[in-house]
Image (cartoon, rainbow, N blue to C red; front, side, top):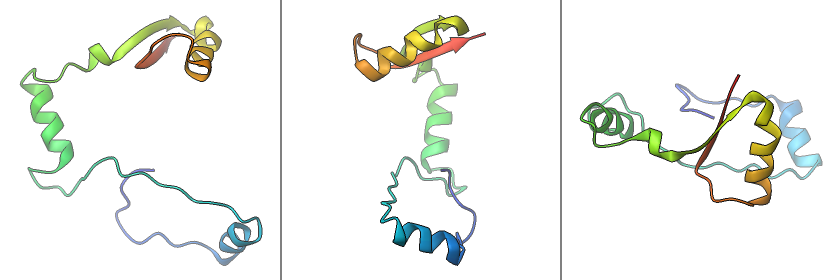
Length: 89
């Protein structure tokens, strides 16, 4: 998770666990952060500051902390359309 600043080293014991348990490692590309003004993070920050992106529109459910289970069930069972389910408590 995140953008590593250097090489990621895996201990032999961890590597062996991956092999012996036949685990599958998966990753996903979500953004480019290169410290330059044209990377993905600066692109989003600029548009946020200009009011071109409205992240509050992505939040479809705001639940009290007591509604956490309901929120998790909505996402798991897809019983309602949702974008981001937030709990406050």
